[in-house]
Length: 115
Length: 110
Image (cartoon, rainbow over all chains, first blue to last red):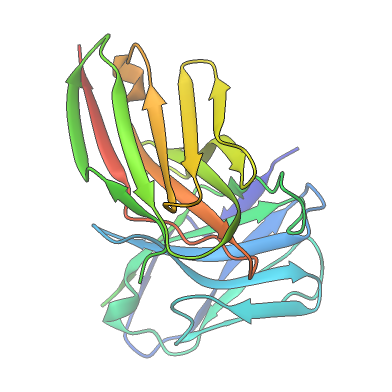
């Protein structure tokens, strides 16, 4: 049982490049989300999904796309990388979004630098 | 803007002392959760309190919730050096989103 797995752990991009950050969970969780963490800013929600085929925007969605074709996977796509997207990205999942016991499990993070 | 706002931003105490962190939020919630983040790592869930609960305990942790004031507090008793980390509150709002605050950086000195 691996939990939430994020790949890659580190990535360096040039401005304008595109890439996909991968997130997979093996706990059959319905709810998945992506956050970015910048120094002194805490975690900010980018996109989230309450189940396969359903996604919605969080606080800072611009410049990012997501899709949820399966319960297990929730990839985050950077369309045209910008230096402002330099950050640490965390993926998280929880069993349910409608109950009171919706504890989130986090991946180890992806450290992204955009030059 | 952040939904959860922790206070203080940083806290330094001696081992064995108690540490108290506060959280304020803005909208109605289903529950509120506290998480810990060790430097450079992912967040780990500590405790969840439902909107109809006022206090909850888990080991050395005590959480209170005041929905009328839209605030919560986390108390860590008898702190240890291993408690050194950042602590975040995460109100889970009625639109099914977690909105984390900026966190409290706790340093426990041995």
